[in-house]
Each structure stands twice: as C-alpha cells, then as structure tokens.
Length: 449
Image (cartoon, rainbow, N blue to C red; front, top):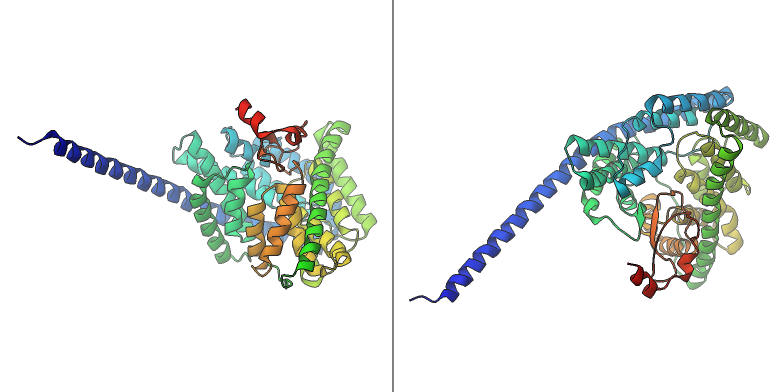
C-alpha cells in the first residue's frame, strides 16, 4: 500500500503550480491593462499636448508682434472667468488633480477645455505664468476619463490619472523619465507609487514620440559643468542653501498673494480685471516684456550665456504671484525655473561659480525646494542639461530639499516624514502648525499609529 506522504507531496506541488500559474495570469492581465491605458493616454496627451504647446507658442509670437495685446489682459481675465463658469470648473486646478490621486474625488472633463483656453489667453495677453500646471491638469483629466472609459475601479483610476499627468508633462517638456518620476512622487512626499511607474513611463515615451513627430522640440539647455573638486563642492553647497531660501520665498509669496488678493478683492471678476491692470502697469514701468509669459528666452540666456538682470528673479516672482492670484492660468514650475536661473546667474559668480553653471544649478535647486521632489529633480537636470554635472545637481537637490522646510507649490501635497529625522508627521505642504515636525520623535509617531 502506497503511503499518503508522496500523494500529499504531489498534491502540494500541483497546488503550488496552479497558484504560480494563477499569479502569472493576474500579472499578465495587469500588464495588458496598464499598457493599454498608457498607450491610449499617451496618444491623446501627445496629440493634445502638442497642439497646446503650438497654441501657446503662437500666442506668444502674436503677443510679441502686437504689443497692444498686453492692454487686453483685463479683458482676458473676464474671458477666463467666463470659460470656467460655463464649464462648471471654477476653483479647480492642480490641487484638484492631486486630490484625485489621494482621495479619488474625481475630475471634471470640463477642466480640459477650461485650462487650455485659460492658459493660451494668459500667454496671448502677457500674463506671467508657465505651462506645467495646465499640463498636469489636462493630463490628469485625460488619464482619469481614459480609466473611466475602461471601467477602472477607484484605485486604478488614481493610477490612470497619474499616467495622463506624466504623458502630458512629457509632451510639453520632452523629459519622459523626469515626468514619470515626478508624477509618482509629487502627490505624497516619501511615498512612491511604484505601481504607476510602468504605465507613467510608457505613456510619457509615447507622448514624447508623438510630440517629436508633430514638431515640438524638447527643452534642452547647453552648459559646461566644472570638474569635481572640493572647493567647488563647498561653493555649490553654500549656493544650494541659498536656493532653498529662494524656493521658500517663491512658495510663500505665491500663496500669500492669493490669500491677500482674495481678501482685499472678494469679487473674482473685479479681481481678474484689477490683476490685469496691475500686470500692465508693472510691464510699462519695467519697460520690458521679459516677465510676460513663461520667459524661456530669459532662462536660456541665463544658462547658456550667463546673462541676467540683477532684479529679474524678484520681478518675475512678483509678476507671477499677481498673475496667478488674480485668476489667470498656466503654472508655477517654469516661473520657478526663471527665478532659479536668474538668481543663480547673479549670485553664483559672487561665490566663485561660473554664471551659466550657477543658473543651471539654481534652476534645479529652486524647482526641487518648491516641489519637494529631489529624485525627480535630479532626473530633470540630466534630461535638461546632460549628465556632466550629475553629482553637483544631486548635491543641490539634496540640500535644497532638506533646508526648504515644509513649504510647497501644491497645498494638496502631503509630506509624510520629517526632513530632519525618521519621524512620521503626515502634513500638507504649507499647513499650519508645521513646527510639530521638529518636535516629533519616532517613538511618539509609532504610538500615534
């Protein structure tokens, strides 16, 4: 009579094979699902993102050819408010997209045409804003509704939203790896949504490829980085600390301007008109249109030629704060590039750092401090400038991230761990009573959990 032990072993082995096969089938289905949504979102974001890029470019060209369009900025504010009212998206923005990733609150399809039209009008009439806020909002909207089309559940819709965000960002800037890493780390600092990496990267590459076919040139800046040496590393470390302070100033001014103007001018229509008039007056007083639109020409001059006005970074911050606080659309990231690059171009030589090199380091350092995304910032530096100064860029990102505190561009962004010790704090960027992060201890944090 055969013993039961061999039979039990055969049954266990068969069960193990069945379990393995089941796991492989589930993985295959997941891969197919995410590649499907990535391809669809990538194509949509690539096409719409390229059209958007071309639209903003033509709006900028038209504004430069017809300077009188600047005087239409107050009217553009009214038009933007009307578009948001018609689409039922008043008050929605990048924070709404981040809330979908966090909480699954959903995204209105009307946000897509609203932010598209609002950003183009802002650039057409000389408002000071970027494009990435629009990219994240339009991409997130496309990704979310692509997931709904595929009947995804709530958790998968959040990943689909991130997929669209990465794809649209990549289509505009031509930085697919930085776009993917930025999106999976920006919503919750200290948490990386690894499940979203493959779909985000795939969608980013697809959108990037389509943007190239449609004639959108990727953003690339040329700078010769110095060799690694102790003295230069010390100088760069000091400069990185200054970048952290500038990033804090940038975020504080942007948010305070919004609060104060909403308090002083409660009516959004009057606020838009007043903001347009302020920007027109400031432009006339400055005697230059350098601070209108995104300002990529100024950024390029700072990095590649080492040229920038000493007051440029302060004025760009002021222009951007008023523009966004009064309801005009675009984004804060490219203005943070402008502020960082011009600040570095002016201050870097005082520390013995070549102006162009300091401009490149400042661009990345201020962006990192403002977004709290050090790893994505390093990848962004490599894709924008090449890997010649990788260690310098990494140093700037690390120091700027650590010293920038708990401020951030996006108030919906959560910071889960203290930057000073291994302690859970779980706060929103710019939240009140953030100082408790300095008092927290690992033991107390574990007890709370």
